[in-house]
Length: 68
Image 1 (cartoon, rainbow, N blue to C red):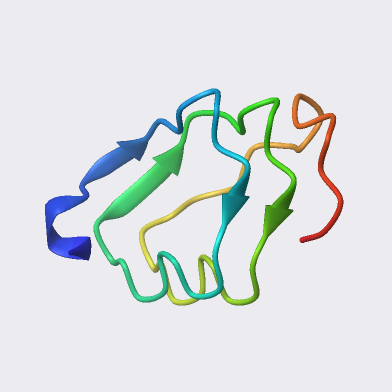
Image 2 (cartoon, rainbow, N blue to C red):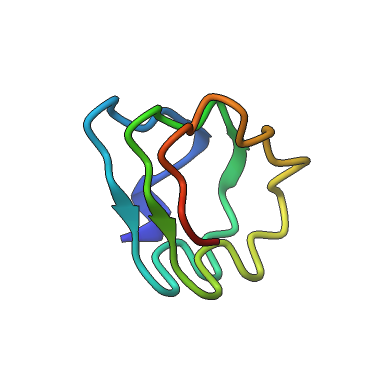
């Protein structure tokens, strides 16, 4: 599935959780535009080995975030 994801990730504003290893080894993701305000959790190793992914945006807009 990761091969279909390229460039910039834009998460929907309704997203509440990113599961464990959700994007693990997705080598075509280059950027995450922003975190949705509704985001509560980011699972373990969710973005591990995403070798093209640059700096992650700050979690400031994810005001409901409980765990990363």
